Length: 538
Image 1 (cartoon, one colour):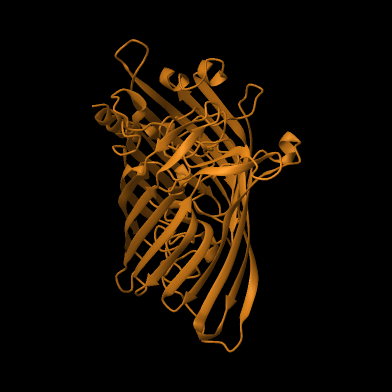
Image 2 (cartoon, one colour; image 1 turned 90 degrees about the vertical axis):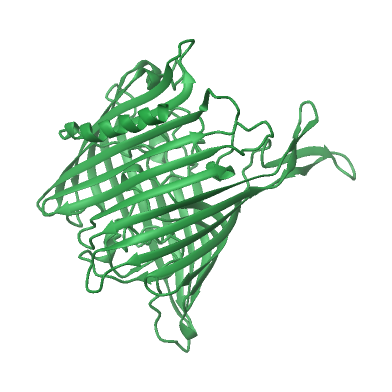
């Protein structure tokens, strides 16, 4: 019943959010330690560094080189630097789709080095003497208050005889806080891409560590369907310029001694002292398959993109050791699967598109590979856990006006037998961001959103369900050197957002936290966002 109430609440929110047309815009960083702990979320929420989600790309058509070294060709009004591709995106990290435009065979190798980057830097105050903090209550909230983040990419691309093309990509990520903020010389870093790829005719192959993703929803900074941070390899085959298939297999092994990886100290076999012995080593294996079909009538720029997608997840049995009591606990093998699809409609003009995502996951696949399940069934597995997501995203531009939209509903249940749990909940959000272009380089965007998470848990001794919700509104005056457009970058911004949170949202924080004591939060500051020549965001 509480699932039905959430859907009704979000529909009302979508109808009423335009009342925020004089204010709007908000943003989130999932790994910020000031945000509330979100029980049962399927994404990792550790202290920085965080594998922060990255921004979306619009779905107009053009000839664009993707992360897998392929290109897609179709009419578009925007230049390639606008990140416009076959709608809503044949993302560079997408599943090796589209057709490579290969030069004639060469007698000698020729290559080049390329540099690219994605980044955002924001400085904000809470207007109470402190720094501005994220205030979302759902897994994928609005992005006006997300932390600073940047990627620096260096890649080598080579063309060999017989039309063979290769690329080696290395992407380094930088996580906030930066030196000029906290004065610390150490910096949180992560390798987001380190892989090599080759294309020979219609076949593409890659091996390495990479972001391997499809289309996202920009306003939520989120990939609702295929979103892998994988350590493995893949193959892609392009049947023609409208049909492609891709498969991939990889693994993750988190340094969690109670679930995936443990080392203990034992007496060394020779001499004195101790040595480390690995007693638990069970990586999660993930396989994915993706089929993409484009429908573009002859002579038209408008069309439809259809995607069918699936994943399999497996983890072997193992044994974890309590180093205090020296007792052992058996961990059974586990598995899960996910199936889903996407339908995207695009006009091929000014980045106008609408995308719809649907996915359902069961068992181990209901949990992100970079997270560890915290509750289990009586057999100590995740069998019985399930997740269902319905999401939408889109953009519309005409003359001096544009509007971005994003939203989703998500139903998550863990595998435990308990009917009341913080690991069973329904959540969702709806976000609208209309904007007015003032001349060719200036604009004002406003944003309104509603978020709600409804738990299968009662408040205190009452029979009332715990519901965390909030309304948010913001305004973003900006300067765009590249001209008009929701996806033109760089973009220099002034930011202001106000968030009104209910009592349930405040209960997600410890009583000593100011977020548990205040019903209204402010976020005011400046920011900039850019992307250029990046394999992840072309």
